[in-house]
Picture 1 (cartoon, helix red, strand yellow):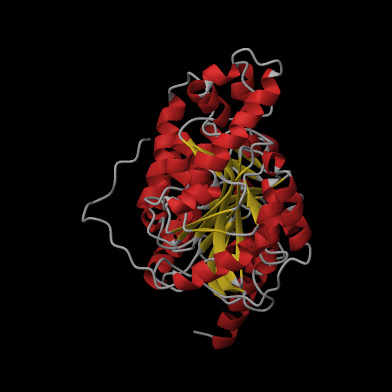
Picture 2: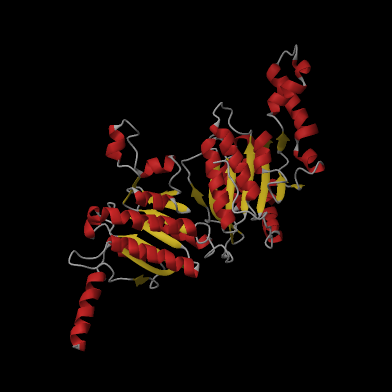
Length: 478
């Protein structure tokens, strides 16, 4: 054995595996400078070149993260057995050490010469990602083509970030287009509108920066403490709150989210989907939270809005991030569609089952079943109300029509008379102060004190510990 020749052979291997490919460059961009360490660099190397995926670990801020990045320039962009084995090993390490996993997707699908073997390999990875769900944070990044089973893997992550050039589909768009289905299928825009993608970014760098933000907000695993950040209040918070309070019925939910969150900390999720709800990750006084806010100026509480809110609740509860809910809704959408019944029941179930800290602020209306799901004492730990809050079993106008129909007979100005009766109903029965008297809310606060009240509640609930009844799992209304 010639030691020198072996060193030369090592140098050749290192040179081959150190090529500046898109896959490797993406991982270098994801991690803090100088922290990326590659795993199994020589695995799957053959006369055709590298195996098509780069795996490794490093730091994103203070968080230790495993990641893999598919290399569309290797093996014709196909996923091989060696490729799948490297990814599978990464999930094994994540399970052993309790660290997040980021997957960067950019491939042309399974290698056809190994198609049957790939069925088993893909099944193994799918099982491992599902097993780790709720144990360690998982983020998928689609920067190229993500097709077939890879699309299942990406959608199984807690968050899915796409670049505008990314493609995501189970069946090839040319097949679905031939059947006359949506021509945008597979595009980032389609993924955003359908709620599959959490965030859409302009390019690779922007997408990876969004991933860094998301990963840094979460604890390493479901048993680890959440990170804390040095932050400052939004300088425009007072103006944003004042504007919202001046016209609560047309309140911009996202503005209120920005006002209560730390400056520049908000990451809005699924912005083009279920627009009746705004969902976001953010920090409040340096602690990561999930925020859900009604946005009726953009839509009602419909099927998509229920799905959107339910997903964030489940993710935040899995990793014990507080859930802050801003309520201003006339209720669930009036529709004959039976699916909404199931979706709204699932939303209420998610709130009830969540054991993390839950803080609610009723800014405007909280009507009927929507109040019960989002703001009732059973589904929240602390509930505040702005002076403009109104809690009612039915819509305010409908209630007045039902209770005071006789008073509206013969009026010369029906609209004015109805509004006067609505104001009287709110002031005497459904308003914030009456709700506080009856114990439906814990306190009535000035809008400008909203952030301070939320921070105090988060501090009070920091040690919350609740155990559900022993069971394998709940049966959600799916």
